Length: 322
Image (cartoon, rainbow, N blue to C red; front, side):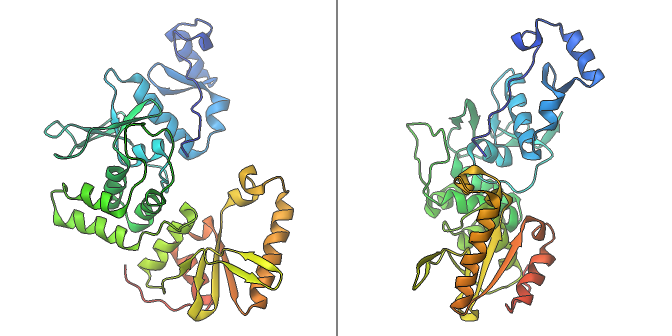
């Protein structure tokens, strides 16, 4: 997500506005030619409408940054969006943190200000903006969000991979111990317990936010814990690394994200139809080894009952736990 480039805003003083006045820009917004993102910050309507929902949220974050008199410190989902930790869904507000003792907990013009915690480290600067460091960001999401929202970010944090634009003088990779240390300043035991619960099931082997989201649903409904990214081979050689392996039940699970069949970094020069054929051949080889293969997509995660039904139909037992 952090690779998304925010389009340049049109402002009263920018060259993109052809030196139009603020009043002229306002009229263009009223006519539908421009989208007013924030006071004095506009985008061409066709550019705005082409953005995905999370990209629009990222643009709102940028607009809050560029319109502020004092650089804000972004937190929670807003910080996660900037640094590249996955966020499920689009928040209603841009979230910032203010120093402890300041007036937090308020929302004004789409910006929610949160009181900071005594003992937290100074903010980082990433992509030209100030934000809470990665362990504190993942901690805050674990405190605030359900497991389906918190687990994708925690899995990603623990993967020992660069998120992008790290300050050169800061720690680049993180472990569960770093998140535990960040949680030690939380004022309430229930908050620390929520973080501990997410950490207890976090797994850096998770291959995508959708896989983490899927696993959170499995955990909440008491399905057996699968092994992740297990290597499979046959007499012809390497088959693949299925997302989920329930070896006891001879069942493999695959989450199919849309990008697998659309983004060039996944297609690797192949057409979507070629990828589909390869997936089918791979699945046939796994079935020949005696495995049942079950698949699902993002739409099956929007209502957890759909994934639960798919896994039950595949023969996996469950016991509702959350």
